[in-house]
Amino acid sequence: MSQPHELSRDLDLLHNLWQGTPLEPWLASLEDAVSEGLSPLRYGDLPRWRQALESLPSLTPLRVVLDRAAVGCEGSITPQEKNQLTSALRGLHPWRKGPFDLFGVAIDTEWRSDWKWDRLLPGLLPLKDKRVLDVGCGSGYHCWRMLGEGAAEVVGIDPTPLFVLQFKAIQYYLNMPGIFVLPVGLEQVPTGLRAFDTVFSMGILYHRRSPFDHLIELREALCSGGQLVLETLVVDGAENTVLTPPGRYARMGNVWCLPSVPTLIGWLKKIGFRQAELIDCTKTTIQEQRSTDWMTFHSLEQFLDPNNEDLTVEGHPAPRRAIITAEAP
Image (cartoon, rainbow, N blue to C red; front, side, top):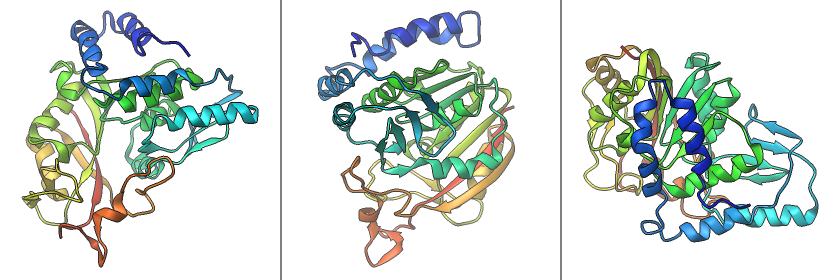
């Protein structure tokens, strides 16, 4: 597999795709942002990850699968090819969002991201022929599910280059049009594009020092009447209840605030979103987030109080995640 620049073809496609659309203003800064996001000067592990990507065997799938829990493809391969494929994919460890299955090689990721997808589906407006943005998409698992729902164009953004290369490994075999994962953050998306029919922000808000700024950026990416799908950590409580952890939360050092659901709905209304609605609120379990052979580091079980699963190791309420939808003004 030879790619002098993993995203050069994608940039060419996006240039042609976005000309004359509301996304055209993004093109002026996109190439530099992508180059910075995949700079080996900033990310010392990039050569190793690129070597893993280069070692993927050339295989032809018989069928692409986007409508099952494990996204991927089916096809017959030899034991030697399976070993080579497994070795290459393991070179992109840790795999956090999934699961995936390529030619019978099951990538059992840290997160059962399909569970989250199943929880949000009842509140999701149809994606058929829509343009979608997935903020903080990781390896792109949910992007594939969006494409499977009929989206015309799915753009995932995540500043972590490993996740972008994991997406490219999956895309190497699925080879589907209309789906992209770019190594940029939301702050590198021009303000006021108002270009996307649906915007997802899942597992991002609590990492933002200014939650209002993040919500405004999401609003400005949406076309009028477009749907926001927001998933984030929350705490129990009435309106204006917010937990601001003084130190770490579940061993994470970059958690700034966890609002209650009424607080979060109030924030959305304050900046102009309409019809904000709670779709789901679920406690995260060690069956949904856990260590696996494909993510061998500590996971949720090690982040909870060993004597009380309702508390984190720091004594905060254990992770509970809410999914809220709202309409952009």
